[in-house]
Image (cartoon, rainbow, N blue to C red; front, side, top):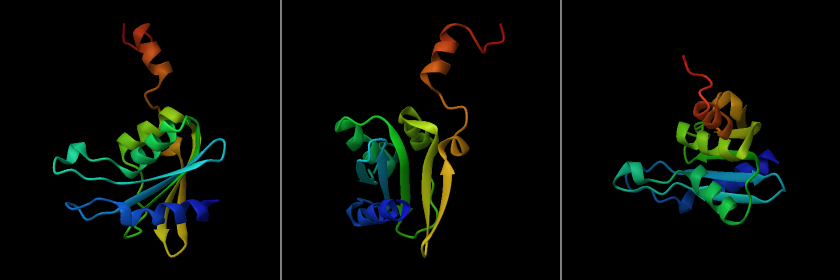
Length: 140
């Protein structure tokens, strides 16, 4: 399973549009019902408008009706163990449970696995937003 996802993530590295950083990232996302979706990073001269590989994979999955995720693999062209950034972690938390597996490609057949909760504990969620609305968690 992990090897297949890493291979899919590596398979889209050449599709990345990275004229500014030249840092190619690929992601392969496994949904709870066994479908896979891939994404690569797409840069923009205004870096804040760039799309991350994980976001592209999530968008493709959601566009196709999938909103429950089980595992994601992330790689870069330099195979440096890249992990999803904070923004991507929060996006993954919208659809994945705390125990969702995040596989990071270290190269040479080596990977490091994290749970989403290890990478981003205490995420913003519907529960935390509702609690804030009700005044829970405030100092009042």
